[in-house]
Image (cartoon, rainbow, N blue to C red; front, side, top):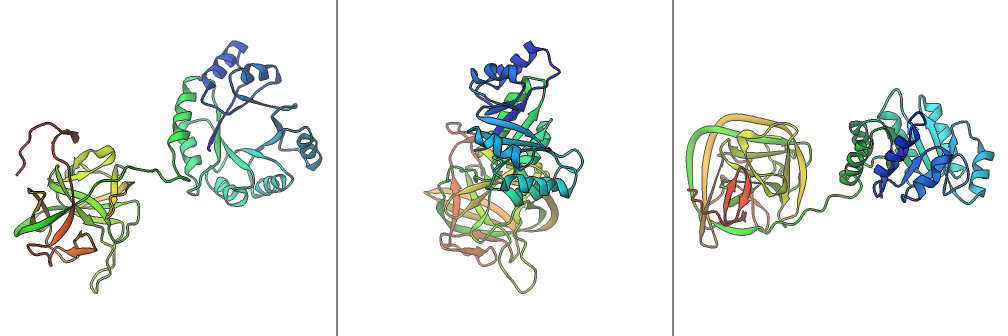
Amino acid sequence: MRELWVEVPSSLPKEEKVRLLEACRGKCQAAILEEELAEEASKRGITPVTGRGGKIILLGEEAGKREVEQAKGSGGKVCLKVSVKSRGDEEKIVEAVEKGVDYVAVSCPNWKVIPLENLIAKIHGKAKLLAEVSTLEEAKLALETLELGADGILLKTSRPSDIAEAARLVAEVKTREPEVMEKLELKTAKVTGLKPLGLGMRVCVDTCDMMEPGEGMLVGCQASGLFLVQAEVEENPHVEPRPFRVNAGPVSLYILAKDGKTRYLSELKAGEELVIVRRDGSQRLTHVGRVKIERRPLLLIEAEVEGNPVKTIVQNAETIRLVTPEGSKSVRELKPGDEVLVYFKPGGRHFGILVEKETVIER
């Protein structure tokens, strides 16, 4: 579990220190503070981290093997607080971990990312690495560094309001445990018709991820019936695969986004969140890296699912493929009677939010 620690500034008046500790109640695991505040922290369920005996003993970067052994001999865990300014500081931390240090709280006053990457690679699983931060932006960066992220953050703040925001961030950032999203129930639809439409403005959605065969995005003419368009992952003799890309369709189509909402393809911009969906209905979040809109020949695909007509429009080209129950099929090879996968959810949409009992007609 990621940990949130707070360093209580010694310069604050005592009543403000206590107020800060009160804000930590139920949100922080530990606090670095003066010995006189240890009891105030403990009665709020926060482990005090001080230079004396206790559950966690704080040591400075000048501590050697003897100090570590003495601190360990008291029965508590040991936290080494270090400022990392050079590669030599990193090596001192590795040596301290080998001597039995349990936590390392590091500040990186110059370079923020590379020292953390090096330390995560060197001590991950051997000691808990806490990154000292003063802003939420720094905290998020530390929790995501080298994909694994730090084991926690040490927040330096004098504002009680920062505590709740930091706790929320620690809980939300998922770099070690993939976020489990509810599976979608994909249904089989039978193709009933195909019609070339001529030129139109179509959208390629380039993501910040890599997709595999059977993965793509859900798009369609109707919000109630979205077709699973596979990413450009297939090998072919004419162009290289682009596993980050879904050639989604014209600007007016709906696409499934975060939290079950739909967006128009025309609205999408770099940095926004969408969902990648697999053949089995599992989904994961990704960010848009680029939206590429060009004029291309289009193809209308009509299908039927559980007696209901559904439609989508795609670029009329061999590289665009719809996901099927067993594989995928180029839209240039589709014919009436073929089966494709769709997400069918009756109801209307109000600014992308599903309203199940709203009567809406989309043709």
